[in-house]
Image 1 (cartoon, protein in one colour):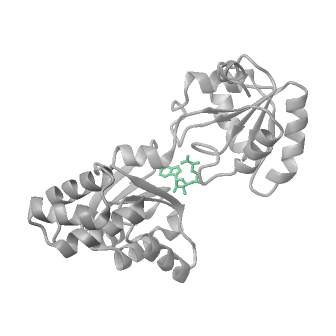
Image 2: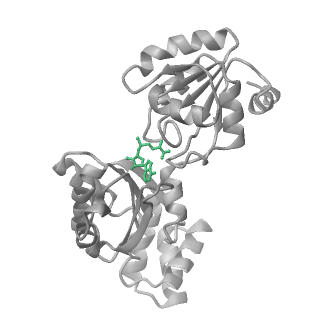
Image 3: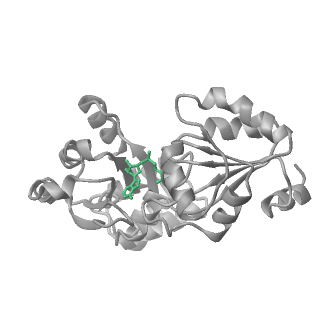
Amino acid sequence: MDQDTEVAAAAGGMTGALYVVATPLGNLADITLRALETLRGADLIAAEDTRHSRHLLQAHGIGTKLLAVHEHNEAGAAPRILERLRAGEKVALITDAGTPCISDPGSRLVAAVQGAGFPVIPLPGPNAAIAALSASGLDVPHFLFHGFLPTKPTARRHAIEGLKAVRAVLVFYEAPHRVIETVADLAAVLEPEREIVLARELTKLFETIARMPLSEALAWINADANRSRGEFVLIVSAPPAAEGLDPEAERVLKLLLEEGLPVKQAVKLATGITGAAKNALYQRALEIGREG
Ligand code: SAM
């Protein structure tokens, strides 16, 4: 697609396109003006659960036809949607809550539509991970969105082990019936001084956002049955800085590496400038290299 066509598509001035539309997490008022206009103007809405979405659409007086497109029929539904696009129709894709394709169905359909040469136009809006991060109170220079962890305990612990050294805030989705096990595993595997934010029922009546050291989280959640009810985003702060390396030494080392100095030379200079331990600087330089 050339640039003009892209602009026309983004402006909604073209038919035969798939619109990926974010919808509310709970509060029905959390929908953008552009989403309402697009859903109203679409020829068809592909929805994860048509009954669930009808509630949202009725609340906004939208009568557009719905077609069920979920995890189990996504591949089969794609040809039917392509047919509609070939006929010049506008199709909107929505899921039960938040942004389609983010721990939700839709990516196979998006790929099929792109593969057939039709534009895919995202309409940004609610997303549980971003909402939770924005109210977490954590410093978030980088975050890793993991979504759901494995449901089996051994696989879950293994997955958390694999994330332990990632120098970023970690973001998980979790269902109410597994949240206690998951919090227990996060506390068992990760450093106890890391903080956890439990963001529950965002935008809904019982919205709760609680931040505490990971070592206190299990006792906190077990202290009141209401604290494990509803939908959760779990956020864990980044790992503590490498032992023996103060923030100034880390800053200088990073600067030197960013200037393109080889590891050995950057470590030597950083040792001279900051007086930090050479070994700690060397270890950290290797980590920075691995992080890319
Ligand atoms: N696509 C969605 C998004 O953009 O956030 C996520 C869908 S995923 C199937 C559902 C999970 O998202 C829930 O299990 C929970 O972890 C999280 N979630 C959805 N709504 C939430 C809310 N209101 N409060 C907290 N977490 C929520």
